Length: 250
Ligand SMILES: NC(=O)c1ccc[n+]([C@@H]2O[C@H](COP(=O)([O-])OP(=O)(O)OC[C@H]3O[C@@H](n4cnc5c(N)ncnc54)[C@H](OP(=O)(O)O)[C@@H]3O)[C@@H](O)[C@H]2O)c1
Image (cartoon, rainbow, N blue to C red; front, side, top):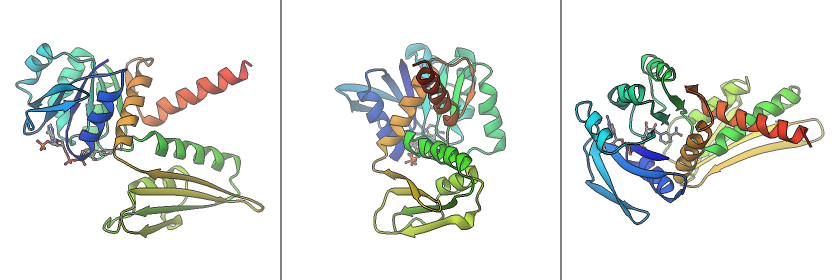
């Protein structure tokens, strides 16, 4: 699958590395706001970098066609490439977490013309943790639930992921404990207190490359989906359902 990556900052550069090492994908180009750097060396190839602009994008896509776009830039970019996603039916995986309601509605609407996945949290691990925690909450609603998040010393706010976990388990923010320690990249733990046992679900972020693994997973899962708007949850659940059905057949 030929892929164009939008954004080459802290996250985008790690994502580019992962995509360039994955034999399922051929990273064709990168787009940034400034068009810099001019090119990047990845996986033994020189990948061209362009400045994302509404005027030049159609010609750029004609010359450098792709099957999918992966967006790790910012919320404004979708207005620039949206029309081309629609016109060319490009698969879109966007990791932008800061869309306002209007922007999100426009991304959603692209699902009528293409396969679109939008995930403010794109690691396989965190999405799996949330899914497993929800399942356990459903099975054992009587268990006490606490959420622990640990991050680097200078992170000021409560982790958005921890808030999302709390929301998905239907518990209040008062169940979140935050610790700020040294250089921890990201630790999320959901603790279920049963009467005679304790279950802990733990996710540790190690490197930003995990975002690339998530984007690659999402692109692959979308291959078998019809056009539409998807969340990471949707594609993960599809896989789990298929696994359960396959297990039931044995
Ligand atoms: N869903 C997730 O799990 C997840 C994880 C990590 C990051 N993200 C999201 O990814 C985005 C990038 O994060 P980051 O930490 O990598 O930021 P960053 O280091 O500031 O990098 C941003 C990159 O996007 C480019 N960019 C900005 N506006 C653009 C535009 N209008 N058109 C094209 N390119 C544009 C920048 O280009 P210039 O350098 O030329 O300005 C730069 O390459 C953020 O929205 C963040 O929320 C999501």
